[in-house]
Length: 415
Image 1: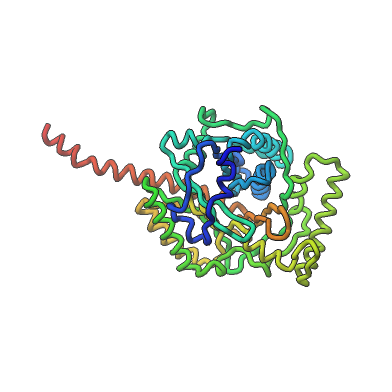
Image 2: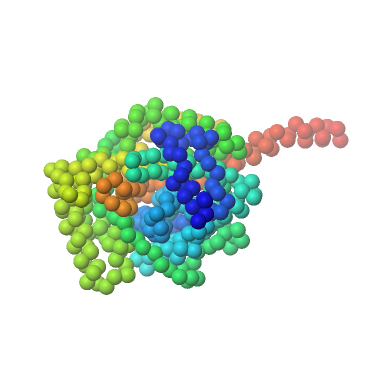
Protein backbone atom coordinates (compact mmCIF):
# COMPACT_ATOMS: atom_id res chain seq x y z
CA UNK A 1 0.00 0.00 0.00
CA UNK A 2 1.47 3.41 -0.97
CA UNK A 3 2.69 5.40 2.01
CA UNK A 4 0.95 8.50 0.66
CA UNK A 5 -2.52 6.92 0.55
CA UNK A 6 -3.51 8.48 3.87
CA UNK A 7 -1.74 11.81 3.30
CA UNK A 8 -4.84 13.86 4.13
CA UNK A 9 -5.85 11.81 7.17
CA UNK A 10 -2.36 12.18 8.63
CA UNK A 11 -2.10 15.95 8.18
CA UNK A 12 -2.05 17.80 11.52
CA UNK A 13 -5.27 19.79 11.84
CA UNK A 14 -5.43 23.52 12.43
CA UNK A 15 -7.61 24.36 15.41
CA UNK A 16 -9.35 27.41 13.93
CA UNK A 17 -10.15 29.02 10.59
CA UNK A 18 -8.04 32.04 11.54
CA UNK A 19 -4.96 29.83 11.02
CA UNK A 20 -5.72 28.80 7.41
CA UNK A 21 -3.46 31.46 5.89
CA UNK A 22 -0.41 30.31 7.85
CA UNK A 23 1.30 28.79 4.83
CA UNK A 24 4.15 27.26 6.82
CA UNK A 25 1.63 24.88 8.37
CA UNK A 26 0.60 23.48 4.98
CA UNK A 27 2.29 20.46 3.40
CA UNK A 28 3.20 19.62 -0.21
CA UNK A 29 0.91 17.07 -1.83
CA UNK A 30 2.67 13.83 -2.77
CA UNK A 31 3.70 13.60 -6.42
CA UNK A 32 1.65 10.42 -6.89
CA UNK A 33 -1.59 12.31 -6.21
CA UNK A 34 -3.91 13.99 -8.69
CA UNK A 35 -5.96 17.17 -8.64
CA UNK A 36 -9.51 16.64 -9.91
CA UNK A 37 -11.55 19.61 -11.11
CA UNK A 38 -15.28 19.13 -11.75
CA UNK A 39 -17.66 21.92 -12.72
CA UNK A 40 -20.91 22.44 -14.58
CA UNK A 41 -20.12 23.81 -18.03
CA UNK A 42 -22.22 26.89 -18.79
CA UNK A 43 -23.28 27.18 -15.15
CA UNK A 44 -23.72 30.96 -15.28
CA UNK A 45 -26.27 30.75 -18.09
CA UNK A 46 -28.07 27.90 -16.32
CA UNK A 47 -28.27 29.96 -13.12
CA UNK A 48 -29.52 33.02 -14.97
CA UNK A 49 -32.23 30.77 -16.46
CA UNK A 50 -33.35 29.84 -12.94
CA UNK A 51 -31.60 26.46 -12.59
CA UNK A 52 -29.36 27.41 -9.70
CA UNK A 53 -30.48 24.63 -7.38
CA UNK A 54 -29.89 22.11 -10.17
CA UNK A 55 -26.33 23.39 -10.62
CA UNK A 56 -25.75 23.30 -6.87
CA UNK A 57 -27.12 19.76 -6.64
CA UNK A 58 -24.83 18.44 -9.37
CA UNK A 59 -21.83 20.02 -7.62
CA UNK A 60 -22.56 18.21 -4.36
CA UNK A 61 -23.59 14.97 -6.10
CA UNK A 62 -20.13 14.64 -7.63
CA UNK A 63 -18.65 15.04 -4.13
CA UNK A 64 -20.84 12.21 -2.87
CA UNK A 65 -19.75 10.02 -5.78
CA UNK A 66 -16.05 10.54 -5.02
CA UNK A 67 -16.37 10.21 -1.24
CA UNK A 68 -18.19 6.89 -1.66
CA UNK A 69 -15.39 5.34 -3.74
CA UNK A 70 -13.62 4.29 -0.54
CA UNK A 71 -14.85 5.63 2.78
CA UNK A 72 -11.84 4.19 4.59
CA UNK A 73 -9.67 6.84 2.92
CA UNK A 74 -10.12 10.54 3.71
CA UNK A 75 -10.32 12.41 0.41
CA UNK A 76 -10.11 16.22 0.58
CA UNK A 77 -12.55 18.30 -1.47
CA UNK A 78 -13.80 21.88 -1.70
CA UNK A 79 -17.29 22.71 -2.95
CA UNK A 80 -17.36 25.68 -5.31
CA UNK A 81 -21.07 26.23 -5.95
CA UNK A 82 -21.12 24.78 -9.47
CA UNK A 83 -18.67 21.95 -8.88
CA UNK A 84 -15.81 20.84 -6.68
CA UNK A 85 -12.05 20.42 -6.50
CA UNK A 86 -10.58 17.19 -5.12
CA UNK A 87 -7.19 15.66 -4.41
CA UNK A 88 -6.91 11.89 -4.80
CA UNK A 89 -4.12 9.29 -4.60
CA UNK A 90 -3.16 7.50 -7.80
CA UNK A 91 -4.33 4.19 -6.30
CA UNK A 92 -7.95 5.42 -6.52
CA UNK A 93 -7.74 7.19 -9.87
CA UNK A 94 -9.56 4.64 -12.05
CA UNK A 95 -12.36 4.12 -9.51
CA UNK A 96 -12.80 7.87 -9.04
CA UNK A 97 -13.05 8.31 -12.80
CA UNK A 98 -15.78 5.65 -12.94
CA UNK A 99 -17.68 7.41 -10.16
CA UNK A 100 -17.39 10.76 -11.92
CA UNK A 101 -18.68 9.26 -15.16
CA UNK A 102 -21.74 8.21 -13.17
CA UNK A 103 -22.01 11.80 -11.93
CA UNK A 104 -21.80 13.04 -15.52
CA UNK A 105 -24.62 10.70 -16.53
CA UNK A 106 -26.73 11.85 -13.58
CA UNK A 107 -26.07 15.49 -14.43
CA UNK A 108 -27.16 15.03 -18.04
CA UNK A 109 -30.08 12.65 -17.54
CA UNK A 110 -31.66 14.16 -14.41
CA UNK A 111 -30.78 17.85 -14.72
CA UNK A 112 -29.90 18.51 -18.35
CA UNK A 113 -26.47 19.84 -17.38
CA UNK A 114 -22.99 18.99 -18.66
CA UNK A 115 -20.45 18.17 -15.95
CA UNK A 116 -16.87 18.87 -17.08
CA UNK A 117 -14.21 16.78 -15.29
CA UNK A 118 -10.44 16.64 -15.67
CA UNK A 119 -7.46 15.31 -13.71
CA UNK A 120 -3.99 16.89 -13.53
CA UNK A 121 -1.08 15.09 -11.90
CA UNK A 122 0.68 16.77 -9.00
CA UNK A 123 3.97 15.54 -10.49
CA UNK A 124 3.31 17.49 -13.70
CA UNK A 125 2.57 20.66 -11.75
CA UNK A 126 5.63 20.44 -9.50
CA UNK A 127 7.87 19.68 -12.50
CA UNK A 128 6.66 22.96 -13.96
CA UNK A 129 7.44 24.87 -10.75
CA UNK A 130 3.86 25.09 -9.45
CA UNK A 131 3.48 24.40 -5.75
CA UNK A 132 0.55 22.28 -4.59
CA UNK A 133 0.07 22.55 -0.85
CA UNK A 134 -2.61 21.61 1.63
CA UNK A 135 -3.59 21.96 5.25
CA UNK A 136 -6.81 21.14 7.06
CA UNK A 137 -8.91 22.81 9.70
CA UNK A 138 -10.95 20.98 12.33
CA UNK A 139 -14.60 22.02 12.08
CA UNK A 140 -15.84 19.55 14.70
CA UNK A 141 -14.74 16.27 16.29
CA UNK A 142 -15.91 14.36 13.19
CA UNK A 143 -15.37 16.76 10.31
CA UNK A 144 -12.34 18.52 8.83
CA UNK A 145 -12.07 20.90 5.89
CA UNK A 146 -9.08 21.09 3.52
CA UNK A 147 -7.13 24.31 3.05
CA UNK A 148 -5.42 24.76 -0.33
CA UNK A 149 -2.46 26.96 -1.19
CA UNK A 150 0.08 27.28 -3.99
CA UNK A 151 -0.46 28.25 -7.63
CA UNK A 152 -0.79 24.61 -8.69
CA UNK A 153 -4.50 24.52 -7.89
CA UNK A 154 -5.17 27.54 -10.07
CA UNK A 155 -3.06 26.09 -12.88
CA UNK A 156 -4.90 22.76 -12.69
CA UNK A 157 -8.23 24.53 -13.08
CA UNK A 158 -6.91 26.54 -16.02
CA UNK A 159 -5.70 23.38 -17.74
CA UNK A 160 -8.98 21.52 -17.21
CA UNK A 161 -10.91 24.46 -18.68
CA UNK A 162 -8.61 24.50 -21.75
CA UNK A 163 -10.24 22.22 -24.34
CA UNK A 164 -7.98 19.43 -25.51
CA UNK A 165 -5.15 20.24 -23.09
CA UNK A 166 -2.53 17.45 -23.41
CA UNK A 167 -1.68 17.76 -19.70
CA UNK A 168 -5.16 16.74 -18.54
CA UNK A 169 -6.83 13.34 -18.25
CA UNK A 170 -10.36 14.27 -19.22
CA UNK A 171 -13.30 12.19 -17.97
CA UNK A 172 -16.03 11.39 -20.50
CA UNK A 173 -19.11 9.38 -19.57
CA UNK A 174 -19.01 7.68 -23.00
CA UNK A 175 -15.38 6.57 -22.74
CA UNK A 176 -15.33 3.97 -20.00
CA UNK A 177 -17.31 2.35 -17.22
CA UNK A 178 -19.69 4.57 -15.24
CA UNK A 179 -20.14 3.23 -11.72
CA UNK A 180 -20.86 5.45 -8.74
CA UNK A 181 -22.92 5.70 -5.58
CA UNK A 182 -24.66 8.85 -4.33
CA UNK A 183 -25.41 7.40 -0.93
CA UNK A 184 -25.47 10.07 1.77
CA UNK A 185 -26.55 12.89 -0.53
CA UNK A 186 -29.39 14.79 1.17
CA UNK A 187 -31.26 18.01 0.48
CA UNK A 188 -34.05 18.34 3.04
CA UNK A 189 -33.79 21.83 4.53
CA UNK A 190 -35.68 24.99 3.78
CA UNK A 191 -33.64 27.99 2.79
CA UNK A 192 -32.30 29.80 5.86
CA UNK A 193 -33.50 33.44 5.79
CA UNK A 194 -31.27 36.42 6.42
CA UNK A 195 -31.10 37.65 10.01
CA UNK A 196 -29.65 41.09 9.29
CA UNK A 197 -30.55 41.93 5.70
CA UNK A 198 -28.93 39.52 3.24
CA UNK A 199 -26.55 36.62 2.72
CA UNK A 200 -23.38 37.88 1.02
CA UNK A 201 -21.46 35.41 -1.14
CA UNK A 202 -17.89 36.69 -1.15
CA UNK A 203 -14.87 35.63 -3.24
CA UNK A 204 -11.46 37.22 -2.72
CA UNK A 205 -8.36 36.35 -4.77
CA UNK A 206 -5.00 37.90 -3.84
CA UNK A 207 -3.05 38.73 -7.00
CA UNK A 208 0.63 39.08 -6.12
CA UNK A 209 3.20 36.80 -7.73
CA UNK A 210 4.64 36.30 -4.25
CA UNK A 211 2.87 33.65 -2.14
CA UNK A 212 3.75 35.22 1.22
CA UNK A 213 2.43 38.61 0.10
CA UNK A 214 -0.85 36.93 -0.87
CA UNK A 215 -1.17 35.24 2.50
CA UNK A 216 -0.63 38.62 4.18
CA UNK A 217 -3.42 40.04 2.00
CA UNK A 218 -5.83 37.29 3.05
CA UNK A 219 -5.00 37.83 6.71
CA UNK A 220 -5.72 41.55 6.31
CA UNK A 221 -9.05 40.83 4.61
CA UNK A 222 -10.09 38.37 7.28
CA UNK A 223 -9.25 40.83 10.06
CA UNK A 224 -11.30 43.49 8.29
CA UNK A 225 -14.29 41.16 8.04
CA UNK A 226 -14.15 40.55 11.77
CA UNK A 227 -13.78 44.27 12.46
CA UNK A 228 -16.93 44.99 10.43
CA UNK A 229 -19.11 42.00 11.26
CA UNK A 230 -17.92 40.93 14.70
CA UNK A 231 -17.21 37.37 15.74
CA UNK A 232 -18.25 34.34 13.74
CA UNK A 233 -21.53 33.82 15.60
CA UNK A 234 -22.69 37.25 14.46
CA UNK A 235 -22.12 36.70 10.72
CA UNK A 236 -22.61 32.94 10.43
CA UNK A 237 -25.33 32.36 7.76
CA UNK A 238 -26.92 29.50 9.74
CA UNK A 239 -28.51 29.42 13.18
CA UNK A 240 -29.83 26.25 14.73
CA UNK A 241 -33.07 27.84 15.94
CA UNK A 242 -33.90 29.21 12.47
CA UNK A 243 -33.50 25.98 10.51
CA UNK A 244 -36.55 24.05 9.31
CA UNK A 245 -37.05 20.81 7.44
CA UNK A 246 -38.85 21.22 4.11
CA UNK A 247 -41.98 19.49 2.86
CA UNK A 248 -41.93 21.32 -0.45
CA UNK A 249 -41.95 18.65 -3.21
CA UNK A 250 -40.02 20.97 -5.53
CA UNK A 251 -37.14 21.23 -3.04
CA UNK A 252 -37.19 17.56 -2.06
CA UNK A 253 -37.14 16.59 -5.75
CA UNK A 254 -33.43 17.38 -6.02
CA UNK A 255 -32.42 14.68 -3.56
CA UNK A 256 -35.04 12.35 -5.03
CA UNK A 257 -33.61 12.69 -8.54
CA UNK A 258 -30.06 12.09 -7.32
CA UNK A 259 -30.78 9.11 -5.10
CA UNK A 260 -33.36 7.29 -7.25
CA UNK A 261 -32.35 8.01 -10.84
CA UNK A 262 -31.66 4.32 -11.58
CA UNK A 263 -34.56 2.82 -9.62
CA UNK A 264 -37.94 1.58 -10.91
CA UNK A 265 -40.91 3.88 -10.37
CA UNK A 266 -42.27 1.97 -7.36
CA UNK A 267 -39.04 2.32 -5.42
CA UNK A 268 -38.74 5.95 -6.48
CA UNK A 269 -42.16 6.74 -5.02
CA UNK A 270 -41.33 4.81 -1.85
CA UNK A 271 -38.15 6.87 -1.41
CA UNK A 272 -40.11 10.11 -1.71
CA UNK A 273 -42.58 8.94 0.92
CA UNK A 274 -39.69 7.99 3.19
CA UNK A 275 -38.21 11.50 2.87
CA UNK A 276 -41.52 13.05 3.93
CA UNK A 277 -41.87 10.70 6.89
CA UNK A 278 -38.27 11.27 8.02
CA UNK A 279 -38.73 15.03 7.83
CA UNK A 280 -41.96 14.84 9.83
CA UNK A 281 -40.26 12.80 12.55
CA UNK A 282 -37.17 15.00 12.49
CA UNK A 283 -39.28 18.16 12.84
CA UNK A 284 -41.01 16.65 15.87
CA UNK A 285 -37.75 15.54 17.51
CA UNK A 286 -36.10 18.92 16.83
CA UNK A 287 -39.04 20.86 18.26
CA UNK A 288 -39.20 18.84 21.47
CA UNK A 289 -35.44 18.09 21.67
CA UNK A 290 -36.06 14.35 21.78
CA UNK A 291 -33.31 11.80 21.18
CA UNK A 292 -33.67 8.22 20.01
CA UNK A 293 -31.39 5.24 20.56
CA UNK A 294 -29.69 5.86 17.22
CA UNK A 295 -29.82 9.65 16.70
CA UNK A 296 -29.18 12.63 18.98
CA UNK A 297 -31.87 14.75 17.32
CA UNK A 298 -31.61 17.43 20.02
CA UNK A 299 -28.01 18.10 18.97
CA UNK A 300 -28.36 17.74 15.22
CA UNK A 301 -29.24 21.37 14.23
CA UNK A 302 -26.27 22.68 16.23
CA UNK A 303 -24.03 20.09 14.56
CA UNK A 304 -25.28 21.24 11.14
CA UNK A 305 -24.15 24.78 11.92
CA UNK A 306 -20.81 23.52 13.22
CA UNK A 307 -20.21 21.24 10.20
CA UNK A 308 -21.07 23.80 7.53
CA UNK A 309 -18.58 25.05 4.95
CA UNK A 310 -19.76 28.68 4.95
CA UNK A 311 -16.12 29.83 4.80
CA UNK A 312 -13.20 28.12 3.11
CA UNK A 313 -9.77 28.78 1.68
CA UNK A 314 -8.86 27.03 -1.57
CA UNK A 315 -6.29 29.39 -3.00
CA UNK A 316 -8.86 32.14 -2.58
CA UNK A 317 -11.17 33.10 0.26
CA UNK A 318 -14.80 32.00 -0.13
CA UNK A 319 -17.45 32.96 2.40
CA UNK A 320 -21.20 33.30 2.84
CA UNK A 321 -21.82 36.08 5.36
CA UNK A 322 -25.03 37.21 7.00
CA UNK A 323 -25.02 40.96 7.40
CA UNK A 324 -26.59 44.33 6.79
CA UNK A 325 -26.37 46.71 3.83
CA UNK A 326 -24.23 49.10 5.85
CA UNK A 327 -21.77 46.34 6.72
CA UNK A 328 -21.51 45.14 3.10
CA UNK A 329 -20.84 48.73 1.96
CA UNK A 330 -18.04 49.03 4.53
CA UNK A 331 -16.51 45.81 3.30
CA UNK A 332 -16.87 46.85 -0.33
CA UNK A 333 -15.06 50.14 0.31
CA UNK A 334 -12.16 48.27 1.90
CA UNK A 335 -11.97 45.67 -0.88
CA UNK A 336 -12.23 48.28 -3.62
CA UNK A 337 -9.34 50.25 -2.11
CA UNK A 338 -7.22 47.08 -2.05
CA UNK A 339 -8.31 46.25 -5.60
CA UNK A 340 -7.26 49.67 -6.94
CA UNK A 341 -3.71 48.97 -5.80
CA UNK A 342 -3.81 45.60 -7.64
CA UNK A 343 -3.44 43.61 -4.41
CA UNK A 344 -6.63 41.58 -4.92
CA UNK A 345 -9.72 40.97 -6.99
CA UNK A 346 -13.10 40.23 -5.48
CA UNK A 347 -16.68 39.39 -6.31
CA UNK A 348 -19.87 39.55 -4.28
CA UNK A 349 -23.51 38.58 -4.67
CA UNK A 350 -26.38 39.21 -2.25
CA UNK A 351 -29.16 36.68 -1.65
CA UNK A 352 -32.18 36.61 0.62
CA UNK A 353 -31.51 33.08 1.88
CA UNK A 354 -28.75 30.54 2.33
CA UNK A 355 -29.19 27.13 0.72
CA UNK A 356 -27.81 23.91 2.16
CA UNK A 357 -27.01 20.67 0.41
CA UNK A 358 -25.66 17.86 2.54
CA UNK A 359 -23.67 14.65 2.67
CA UNK A 360 -24.64 12.54 5.66
CA UNK A 361 -22.58 9.49 6.59
CA UNK A 362 -24.37 9.27 9.92
CA UNK A 363 -26.64 11.53 11.97
CA UNK A 364 -24.36 11.58 15.01
CA UNK A 365 -21.66 14.02 13.98
CA UNK A 366 -20.35 12.72 10.66
CA UNK A 367 -22.30 14.92 8.27
CA UNK A 368 -21.24 17.91 6.14
CA UNK A 369 -23.31 20.82 4.87
CA UNK A 370 -22.49 22.92 1.84
CA UNK A 371 -23.72 26.51 2.02
CA UNK A 372 -24.35 28.97 -0.80
CA UNK A 373 -26.59 31.92 -1.61
CA UNK A 374 -30.10 31.03 -2.71
CA UNK A 375 -30.14 32.47 -6.21
CA UNK A 376 -26.64 32.15 -7.56
CA UNK A 377 -24.29 32.93 -4.68
CA UNK A 378 -20.74 31.94 -5.51
CA UNK A 379 -21.32 31.44 -9.24
CA UNK A 380 -22.63 34.97 -9.74
CA UNK A 381 -19.95 36.44 -7.45
CA UNK A 382 -17.44 34.70 -9.72
CA UNK A 383 -18.61 36.85 -12.65
CA UNK A 384 -17.55 39.97 -10.76
CA UNK A 385 -14.32 38.32 -9.66
CA UNK A 386 -13.33 37.45 -13.25
CA UNK A 387 -14.01 41.02 -14.39
CA UNK A 388 -11.81 42.43 -11.64
CA UNK A 389 -9.04 39.90 -12.31
CA UNK A 390 -8.87 41.29 -15.85
CA UNK A 391 -8.68 44.81 -14.41
CA UNK A 392 -5.77 43.80 -12.14
CA UNK A 393 -3.92 42.36 -15.12
CA UNK A 394 -4.46 45.58 -17.05
CA UNK A 395 -3.22 47.66 -14.11
CA UNK A 396 -0.07 45.58 -13.86
CA UNK A 397 0.58 45.93 -17.59
CA UNK A 398 0.16 49.69 -17.34
CA UNK A 399 2.66 49.85 -14.47
CA UNK A 400 5.08 47.69 -16.45
CA UNK A 401 4.70 49.89 -19.53
CA UNK A 402 5.21 53.05 -17.48
CA UNK A 403 8.47 51.64 -16.06
CA UNK A 404 9.84 51.41 -19.61
CA UNK A 405 8.94 54.97 -20.65
CA UNK A 406 12.05 56.75 -19.27
CA UNK A 407 14.36 54.29 -20.96
CA UNK A 408 12.48 54.60 -24.24
CA UNK A 409 12.55 58.43 -24.05
CA UNK A 410 16.27 58.36 -23.36
CA UNK A 411 16.85 56.19 -26.41
CA UNK A 412 14.89 58.59 -28.62
CA UNK A 413 16.87 61.58 -27.23
CA UNK A 414 20.17 59.85 -27.93
CA UNK A 415 19.06 59.20 -31.51
